[in-house]
Amino acid sequence: MSVLAFDIGASSGRAMLGQLSSRTIEVKEIHRFPNDPVRVGNRLQWDVLRIYHEMKQGLLRAKGQHGLPTSIGIDTWAVDYGLVDRNGELMTNPYHYRDTHTDGVMEQVMKSVPPSEIFERTGIQFLPFNTIYQLASIRQQKPYLLQEAERFLMIPDLLRYFLTGEMANEFTNATTTQLYNPVSGSWDHYLMNSLHIPHGMFHPVVQPGTPVGSLRSSVTEELGIASVPVYTVAEHDTASAVVAVPALDRSFAYLSCGTWSLMGTEVEQPVIHERARELNFTNEGGAYGTYRLLKNIMGLWILQECQRTWEREGLSYSYPELVKMADAAPAFACFIDPDDPLFLPAGDMPKRVREYAARTNQRIPQAEGAIVRCIMESLAMQYRYVLDLTEELSGQKFQGLHMVGGGIHNETLCQWTANAIGKPVWAGPAEGSAIGNMAVQWIAQGELSDIWEARAVIRESFPVKTYEPEDTPLWEDACGVFGQLTRKR
Ligand code: LFR
Image (cartoon, rainbow, N blue to C red; front, side):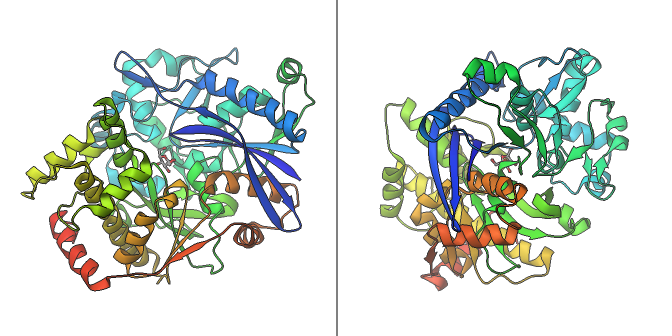
């Protein structure tokens, strides 16, 4: 049974074909395309029509190489959305969440609705780019858009709509808006009213694994192919990645490691109380009635931006080269708090790392290797800190940490993470989001019985590499220094 997963991430979008036979999954990349946000003036936007075009190319290639898949699912990062008018047309290019239109908006919103109330109603962490703040900004800057909009669709909802002509709001992504109430199980009209966001454009949410139409005739005619059913999957990429965690134990901790690092555990009920809010943990909707109690960590984004900065300066380092340089640099020389807001927007990250070091009276890292080492060590220590908090909030003790996502190709980071947490790291699979996307399609079609069978099959199909902790006392001491420096303890 082959299914097609469109997995659209920060560095690229991909069409991935998954084949399941005799409890073995094989995954093949059919098509890869850039997903660079487009800057026009000071605005950073999605090139969503080009993405849709590339998805159609992916479909054509899938058909050419393997025949049409039995179904299609789409996942992308969270929080971004498009608005559709009464004629069924996209009204304007969706903003990218790293655009500055939300600058200062979260703070403004918090003045009209207390953060305790927002958290109580949604269980979602406070990130300045959440959809709620994007919409609050649009309400001020471009009220006409909200007045005219007929439907609100998250990006995968929108791409699915382009393919099928059917509109539906998928659950995992809906929760990330910070406008969905997991206790009442519906959009939070009170919050919308408080911020003058019209609620008619939000429709009841649909769970992952629901058949939501099939390729519309304009698509099948244009591509000269037969129609294919389309399913909702866990359309938030992190939700898909968590589906693919090859855990055997029902109590497990994960780190979805890519541009962002998302660390936490899976829970049956959202954990909504004062301490969770204080620690800025989130309860994002997962597949099959679960919630993801997790925290966003800035992740490899800081390193990727360093790489781009050096590239602009004519210093072109491959990713493995950067890791090698870090390996050779002196240990524990300088730390950053990766979650400092300084590191959120795109820009000259080496400069910002140096700025952070100066601000915190540390020796300023000069060489590229020293900067990379500082970022990677700091990430590993932040993982340690967040894992401790996940244990505290969930009342569980974890035996080790599952790492999934492209970040596991950085073996040094996996090893340092094991060192920092003092427990084993189990790394794999790297293609977490795409595999989780496929798993939900197979479950929907009855090819796999449930998420636990899916996880067992994933475990049997993909290698999982174990990293045992090393140099524990050294890392313990360093974590102490890191904690004091970043004022986390
Ligand atoms: C990861 C991710 C995170 C979300 C961030 C922005 O790709 O989806 O889960 O917080 O991107 O949407």
